[in-house]
Length: 205
Image 1: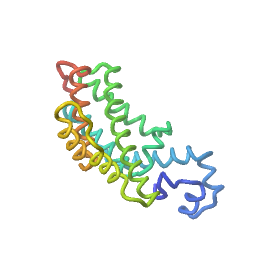
Image 2: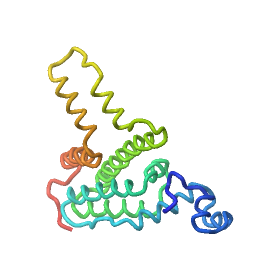
Image 3: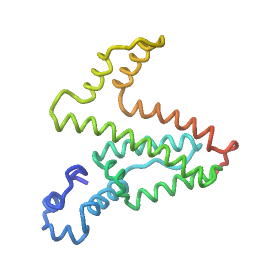
Image 4: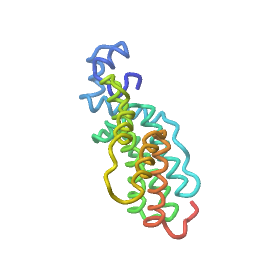
């Protein structure tokens, strides 16, 4: 999708392909359909991991790959969040959920586990892109830097001991690479899945 999901219009796609807009309209009736075609190409062409190994390592690999896929195609995650879902996304969810069932999950718990980790990836990427987009559009001090400044300079109210330490940790969290912070959150989610959803005795597919 060389046009980019943020900038996609019939005119932009037609210009990129060197065809008339009428030709593009023959393939997509509206902008959402145009975006869906682009998403299908992006998702189908991405190098997704395999389905081997324990359920937790499998989900971790796929969740990080999902984060990286949305990173590679800025704006795509916002389209997905609006409900513009290409068939390839449905197919991926089927495959991952099926792999969990093979490892002893019941189908309902497999769906919940898949939804949890991929929602986390999408939500995290939306937040990252929202900050990055704000920086580009307004051409101001980096939005992420503004968030850090707000946390670093706000007065600490009287209260429980440890507030200063918590504030310092929050600033460190803002500074860390986004994917690293995502992976820490993912670890917590996977621990919850292990406690609440995973089979006590994992089956070998």
